[in-house]
Length: 109
Image (tube, rainbow, N blue to C red):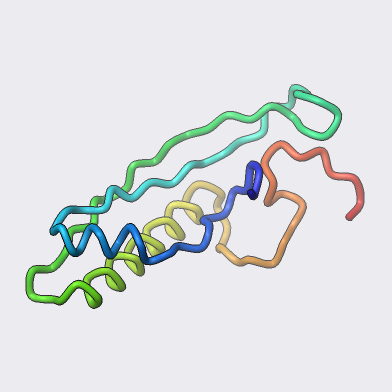
């Protein structure tokens, strides 16, 4: 479990497969996390969350389940990446940094 991790987590195809197979949309979401400079405990500040409901992703009737699920997953990841970059004002990359864990009172790592 990645506690208070700000970045979009890796996506798996399962939910997109079932959405494509059942011709239903994916409701794409991104959770923005901000530190509140009030200690929660020795290791963490309190945090607040903002839920972003992004554009729904619909299956394309002209594509098969596999094509749809892969396209829907890629679209969802792109939307989450764009939401992250808009919320935090920086490009998304996966090299770990101290500010990746919301609220963490980091000692030198």
